[in-house]
Image 1 (tube, rainbow, N blue to C red):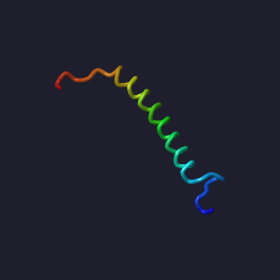
Image 2 (cartoon, one colour):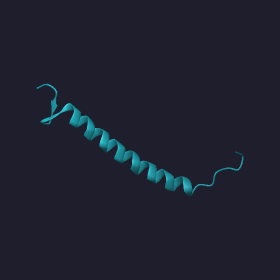
Image 3 (tube, helix red, strand yellow):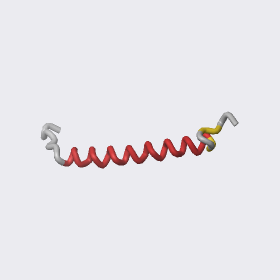
Image 4 (cartoon, rainbow, N blue to C red):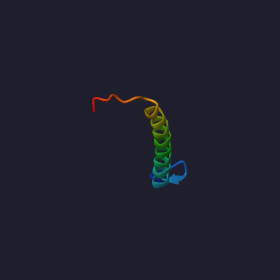
Length: 45
């Protein structure tokens, strides 16, 4: 049973890490969108 981590399979562990990464990404994007909306973009575009 070398493929088990904390008593669960490697696939379950990878899915848990992926889920946490997606949640962190959503939090960062929500904060970034709030910051971007408060910043005035230059008109040189």
